[in-house]
Amino acid sequence: MKDELIAGMATVAGSSLGSITVATVPVVVTTTTYAGGIAGWLGFTTVATTVMAAPITVPVGGIVAAGALLTYGGYKHIKSQECQS
Image 1: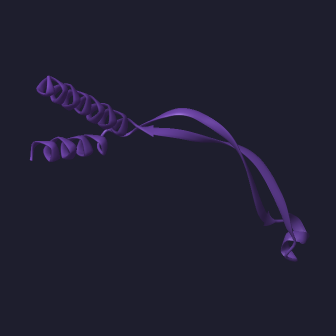
Image 2: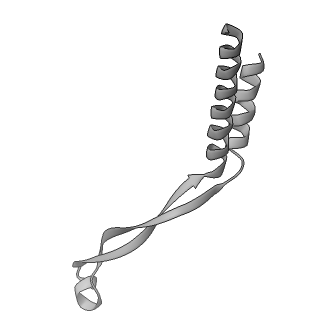
């Protein structure tokens, strides 16, 4: 029961802390839009290509939860090694 409680607490902590942006990656976005003026009124279109910055976000809670679970796993491993010797 204790292991399930710790895993549940790590999951709750992981979902409530938000996220941080660690980098931005340039992304090319191509959109089709109506042409200007009479050509647009007649239904002609034009293609617009823009470069945008897409953020790469990492959930803070996920980092905290993964660290907590890895630490707890290490603790359990050390305890099991102590019991065997």
